[in-house]
Image 1 (cartoon, rainbow, N blue to C red):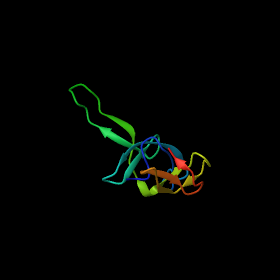
Image 2 (cartoon, rainbow, N blue to C red):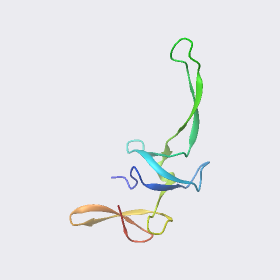
Image 3 (tube, helix red, strand yellow):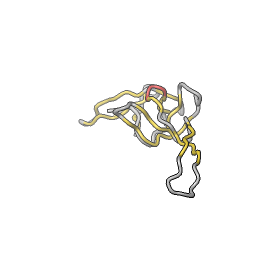
Length: 103
């Protein structure tokens, strides 16, 4: 089970977008990467598909290694590490900074 899920608010710890915040669009557990909205943008060159159509350059979000992002605690609004606690037989995520449960 990964500590970061789709829809979480995260802060970038390393790279060209260091310090910026965004929401997680997707998580890839096999590659241990996340995609964050409007961050780590790359330019992709697209070839024309049909005759007469022009090629173009589009900017898309690229994946970031999960170790380069930190979850933003909803209670303190600061980046935090995540731990797990078993409550009522189910595993829940807990903020290390505030000690409170993360939904």
